[in-house]
Image (cartoon, rainbow, N blue to C red; front, side):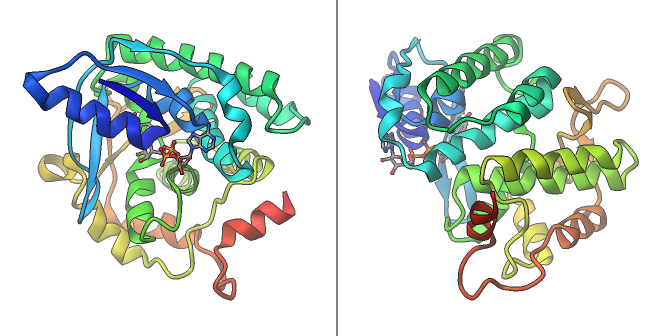
Length: 282
Ligand SMILES: NC(=O)c1ccc[n+]([C@@H]2O[C@H](COP(=O)([O-])OP(=O)(O)OC[C@H]3O[C@@H](n4cnc5c(N)ncnc54)[C@H](O)[C@@H]3O)[C@@H](O)[C@H]2O)c1
């Protein structure tokens, strides 16, 4: 089975390939930045359900992934920003020098050399982790950075927020959770804001999404079923916080609620999502 397209075709074909005839050979030809940088380089295949993201899915490795950055030239600036959200995730979570590269880059985000650099770097960073920990249960949990709260936001927004935008806001909330729990310095929270603004990504929770709804939606996260909410959190750039060798950090609803409230827009933007304001400023 060959997938051709963005992250959604990757994940849908991946799930179908994992179940048809108890498994078909899977090839990905990813065409969005999100898919080239992240979704195609994954054993995690999933389909969204009525109650949340990836409610149905499987772990299944592709046989081959063929990436050509030339296909990215037809992407809109919004779709490039979406992919850059996962690029920022890899940089913050795995590689301080990658953060510096992104902060210092002052060219256009659709420049093909820039895109080739980030795609190459992301693939290498992700493969390093996914090879040894394909289910993302240990060190590779860093790949879920920003997703614990990002997924509920994406779902609660009725998918008005894209995956990349939701992860961007989710990373900001995660940074605040880490700071509230005393695991990181305030500078790390500031760095999140600078990186996300630089690439036109949002970092505030939309005004119309209530913290209590986020807490309710978190209950549809698989980890919640057995252990309550656990999050991948950073103690510094490139450093996943571990407690007694465990990377899935238990976080109380109160702390998440506070971090969401601290991250909220001050006022509704006359029907426009806050991120469009950030894009204008950036
Ligand atoms: N399994 C994983 O590890 C993993 C990782 C990251 C993201 N994801 C999933 O990926 C999805 C998001 O990926 P996405 O943003 O690619 O979504 P998508 O597949 O919906 O693509 C977004 C849009 O880009 C368009 N598009 C794709 N390639 C294009 C091109 N070359 N030129 C112009 N338009 C193009 C598509 O037609 C679509 O309208 C989410 O559902 C997310 O959950 C999964």
